[in-house]
Amino acid sequence: MEKGKMIYEGKAKQMFETENRNEIIVRFKDDATAFNAQKRGSFKLKGEMNNAITSLIYDYLGKKGINTHFIQKLNEREQLVKKVTIFPIEVVVRNYSAGSMAQRLGIEEGIKSPVTIFDLCYKNDALNDPLINDYHVLFLGLATQEELEEIYQLAEDINILLIDLFDKMNLRLVDFKIELGKTTDGKIVLADEISPDTCRLWDKDTLKKLDKDRFRRDLGEITEAYVEVYKRLLKALN
Ligand code: TMP
Ligand code: ASP
Image (cartoon, rainbow, N blue to C red; front, side, top):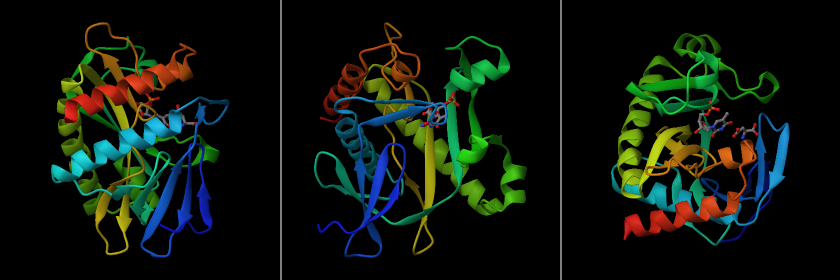
């Protein structure tokens, strides 16, 4: 696969054109940022682990009937995906209290929610990705009502599949963030990545955090945590 010119560089990934205008190459970097890039770092193997983990998860979800942008893993750091127009919305799905929700509501982390919680954030760095609701999405024209309904359904279906997959890895899926996109033929698909960067994953027995909170909160053993998730994933899928 010939890599063309770089069309986008984000905090953790780069994107390149290919000879097929409907496909792009995503390259996963070792860089990490948190708190809207106020905190920066880089750690060994992060790019490789996130590429490997995302590839396995998207392949798994695809086989379970979820439409994704994923085509194939190309090498340790790169994967080929369908070109999509990303909805400027981050969809956060929460099964337990944690992170910004726990802080905002003044509650402890780790309380199981009786219902699946969906938060929407407006992807806008200048505004620090503010929390928004369905009405704001419609007001800003970020998606139509029908698209939003499809997005919620996809997020719910993905949550059910991921809870089950991570359970097999002895991991509690506390919460995660997804991004959706529209392909050139108008289909809504899961895009971006699902990795320890975008999920909170706690060991079910020890409640040890095996995700990016180790970086956000200076807990150490970051690479080790990502490698551990990858190893458990390989085992669960075999
Ligand atoms: P939060 O509790 O900080 O809102 O995060 C909820 C989930 O979303 C958590 O699993 C981490 C993930 N997330 C991202 O993937 N990217 C982000 O920029 C943020 C803020 C959270
Ligand atoms: N990736 C986000 C940032 O740099 C935040 C996070 O994941 O905590 O702002």
